Length: 470
Ligand code: DUC
Ligand code: ZN
Ligand code: ZN
View (cartoon, rainbow, N blue to C red):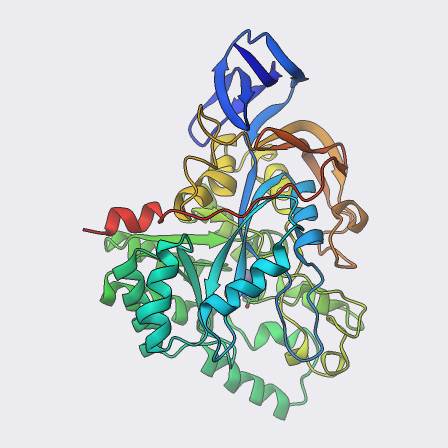
């Protein structure tokens, strides 16, 4: 058989297996996994490299309106460029419904933002901020049929948060339609109350972002979200879990028999609230929600990854420039933590950090790495088996990893729109030296070889909801 491309002499790693094999690629798909493949237009020598599914980052914010005068640092061009540099072949971005807006209108806008700009494949989660009877009764069911099979709801942020009855109604629609709901779990009323108290006490520095969003506010909301899901009998994903108490809520709900998924992110393994407590306004760089906690919370999140409490390791890439009037240091943000936009960049650093800190330091296996960074994302969000694995018939979305390559993370390397990385100066071992998407080489070395080759991906329903449906 003659292939377009053969990847030769590498070690293939999937979520379940590690084996020596050549990979034959034809028409953008994996056509053969066997030794001694010989004939192809292009032969890539992967001696000493791991041949892994391209990363799938299912939690990425790009070109999202972020409040008065605040501009997100990445659009679909820079954000997906950075994703590719970091070894990702697919990202799932959020399409945010404005109040009063139909979901179709919102999607039209986001498709226009993305059109012709994406360097990796892209799909959208819907963010439901206005769950009117029309949105839940008509629009959402039709959109799930059209391949928008997941959505996010917020329990925090005035203007975004849903009340419990609205969450229940949204969950119920998800149950009927087979959509998968992601929940941002923090108790808004508690946070509001604490912000008020901090204001009375004259506490305005970035570090108070963390003290106004305590673990108990996340734990309580996590428990409530899981209880609401249990009441309606529907799966949910608890996103960006930062600490042990919230994680244990997930474990307990599973023990009760609930079908749920959990996600954690690099910031909860690598940062703490102390990073927000720095001279001048440097701490603003680390403001995200939920906030990074403490060393014990980092250990808990590692444990959650090792033990499978977390299915997903995502970046929650939500980039703002630091030294910028439209970013972290906007005029109001300089005076009060409450106006510092929430979010940090991380789409390019997610995989190298977990590879280095997790695989190379012996905390997780190579197969766990692939599961939590790619395969589980594909399964949970309706892209499997086309995406997320190395198997005959799958898209040839392949990252070649050099486990020996040492890199010091610097902002310039990441090619995103932010003017900083929270991980500046971090030494990592292991790097994605080449990325193929649907068989085409997109990244080699530190540069993009091909521009805007990404495609939009309509999705099937989640493995979690299809098993649940009667
Ligand atoms: N939640 C996210 O998922 N991302 C950024 C901000 C937030 O609150
Ligand atoms: Zn969130
Ligand atoms: Zn997010």
